[in-house]
Length: 111
Image (cartoon, rainbow, N blue to C red):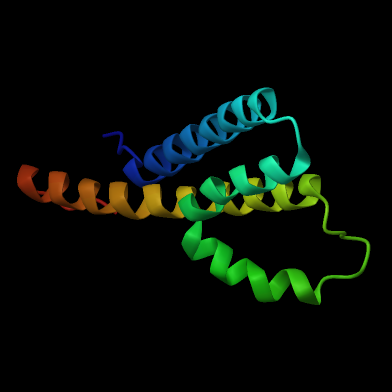
């Protein structure tokens, strides 16, 4: 009997959806804003979407070596990587719970 790994499917799905949202948002942001100050303000939306991981990233970023500067590219890259990890974990937890409930309704609990 083949077991479905709901947690893995959910984690990968949410991580891919977040990545697509991130790039589509950046494309529209850079297409509509002419100044770099406007781009910085537009990135606030991405920070809000990633509030839990952004709060954890703040102290970590200050302890990294000086090769990481304050550029928008570095900030965007860190937000992308952290967001992918965050939404993978969220999707995994949600679908793990879904898998447990679905298997319990069938009468068997699969790990």
